[in-house]
Length: 112
Image (cartoon, rainbow, N blue to C red):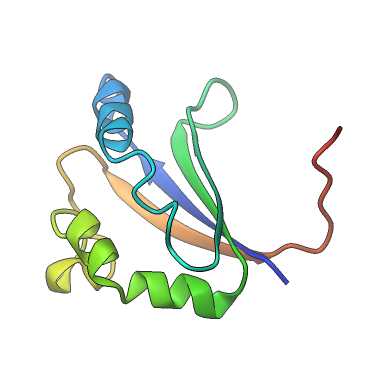
């Protein structure tokens, strides 16, 4: 069963473009991770002021393996404690706060 991880990131007003540029700079960096299925960066337009980073994984084990990988640590060194392995730092230059939301996919449709 696929799992979905959503990182809800609070970004100060006027700093959204900087966050988007950071993600654009490392676009595709997770694509080759075993078990990786999908990535989306969602920009808030109405109802919430947080950005949502959504990833879908084949399993919890695939996600955890990526979280423990050198690639993850390299990508998150500046934004996470313990050299990129730990929790998100409370004050990142772009984000005011971040929370990881975790789900299992129960039903999915991709259209056609």
